[in-house]
Each structure stands twice: as structure tokens, then as C-alpha cells.
Length: 163
Image: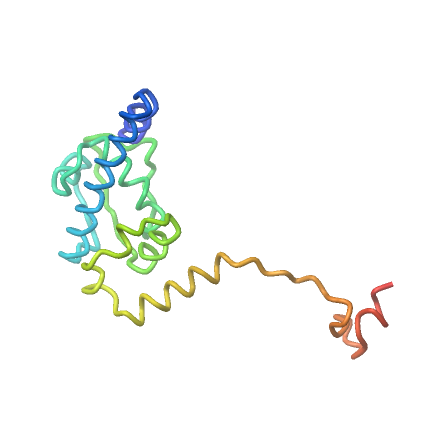
């Protein structure tokens, strides 16, 4: 069974209070792992999954969960469903995507890490945050009654093609 599947099963089979404790412990380890990655500017991590887990202070199953979380921030995604302890992996992190995805996950404990200062400037972080927020906004392409008609006549929509 894959590392990620093991992680999921252990959370689902645990009693709710125990599952919550497991998640809180994981989030602390995840924060430390990201602090290490950002602090040492490790944009590429490669090796066996079990070795990378140890390097980041995670169990192999937790590394499966970590890989699932960082997957959309990688140059090429990892198939977490086939990730085993002895699998050779290469995680090529795209910093900008990682920062935006941390906001998307509402992981304040991650996007506020002081180690980001060594990776992105305040201006870069603000631009990325603005891009993320704009990507979440709903945009309507509906033509209003008093808008110019999309046919190009120059008339108001209500007096032209609205009929």
C-alpha cells in the first residue's frame, strides 16, 4: 500500500479526538519541514522517499501526506498513489506556486514563515497574493441592459440585440 494511502487510513481509522491530535502533530512537523526547505533554499529534493522523510523529520507515511500537499507546487507532479518508502523521487519546487498554494490552503502557519524572506521579497509576496486573490474572484461576462451592445452597433444592448 502507498505511503499516502497508509496515512489516510491511519487518520480515518483513528477516533476523532486521536485523529485531531495526529493532524496537529503532523502540521507541526510540516511547518518544521517547510522551514528547513525554505531556510536552506532546497528547491530540489531527490532520493528515496524514506530518506527524504528522515531528512525532513517526517515518518514515511507523513512524507506521503507531505508529498500530496506540495504536489501542485512541483514542476512535475508525483503519483502519490504509487509512492512507496523505497521509491526514488525528485521534488522540484516552484517557489511562486508554493506560496500561492499555501494561501489557497489557508495555511497561515506556512505562508507566514520567516524563512520566506530569504526566498521572496515583500513586493514579490504581495504580487503573488494579489494574483491568488484575483484568481479566486468570480467574473461575470453577462452583458447588462445599459452596456454597449456586443454586436458593435454602438447602441445600448437594451435598444439593439436584447430582444
